[in-house]
Length: 349
Image 1: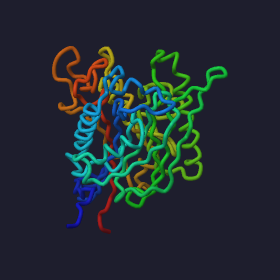
Image 2: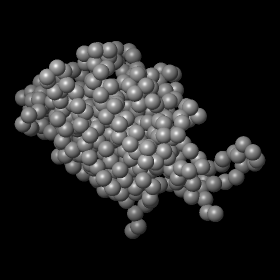
Image 3: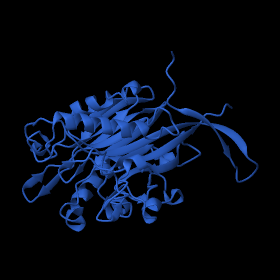
Image 4: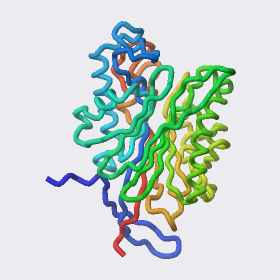
């Protein structure tokens, strides 16, 4: 039996500002990001501080908990964007995965196996051993190139170990797209004291983005990740130069659709009653220019569905996370996924 297409062919009624409405056909594609909150494999790996996530570690992270964690993550991922696209995202960036083994186990969970997802992952020098990765549907996204971009952070003579940026180029339904998957350094020391580290991560991306847009100002670029900074933060607004409105995004610039969400108090994670929107998906001008873009930005969504949300108690409304302290509570993640939708005009001429 022929496999169902990933993309829905939608008939949208678009109102032309100059004349009457006309029907056009569009393909719809989803790109998502999800911080999986400590998806570790329950054995120790050399040179990683992963002892807490072993059976005798602080989290008592047994094989049973590991497989339950996999099931919960797969259950959540399986529902992302499926109200609009039955097969879910074409691209899914993830953070806080320990190694390729957990990714193999994840995509082979019963909830996801039929999608035949593949993934790109490189081991990074992060001290805890957590990395980023890109899951993708190989039928609709063809890899051209992939590499890790090191984030070089030094404190005096000491080199700090943090996550690399994952850079992937590929063909999305025939169109070249460049993807950066990020997990910037944490705020554990406080936002101000640690800002310089995230500045280094932002500059790592910006340097490569500048190279791409110098070659092609219309390059279609997606920067996604847990930035540990909000849409209003200096690293996002000034270093990346991401604006909050399409009209303010110039040729070669970046557009951040999450600024309005954040100003309205909508976030993807919550700490001490304050909502943050660290999990962002930022787009280049190439997705906004209707005259030249094949794939265009359509809309965005924080995937804060009730089943992913704590329903009672002190943390009601927060993401229903996997652990409370070090105690397994059979949840999902301390972050909500975020999604953007892209459309492509396929109206017959």
